[in-house]
Image 1 (cartoon, rainbow, N blue to C red):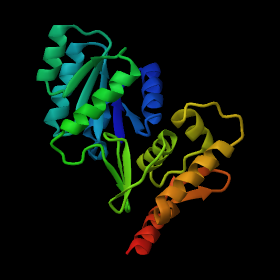
Image 2 (image 1 turned 120 degrees about the horizontal axis):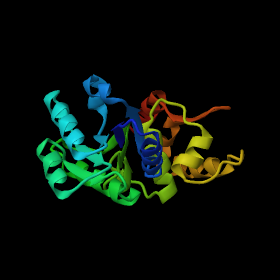
Image 3 (image 1 turned 90 degrees about the vertical axis):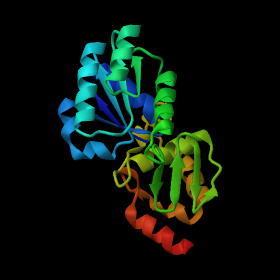
Length: 228
């Protein structure tokens, strides 16, 4: 899943990025000027962080005016019942206190994506691989691939960051929630198992010597040829 986070609060950004990374999702952080960017339309959901409900409502109305039609979740530092109603009426699909526990924020984002009129919202596809964060499932050419939690997180994160090299430290600390000690054996084992389970599709996961790993378009073309 790809999340666009609009926030000026560095602590909130870091906390949110890590929480979603450990669910296999990529968070792109931008300032409010990013609302006008066409790139924002490629994200599955927008998170809008504001100090209070009045500010959130103003920005929600602006987002809807510039034709941002995807799921929109507002997070407010201070919030009361009247504020919740105002933000929802302004165009948010959900509104939560910024201090909400990570697990609840993740669940709320998944819920608004499931309710989105945009078919398949939240689902990611790369070649013949499809990852569905809602069901925590993955498939290749329509066939379900049983993945362990760590494998699902790694695949989802690589897919959300397709064609970008992702370092082992980032995968260990941000995605798996461990501490990087310089030994990348854990990541190599997980990715080896993941490639094996994906079969021909596993060729899309490329090891970039000395840098990390990425899902490549070239690998996607190879796996489609093998499955044809």
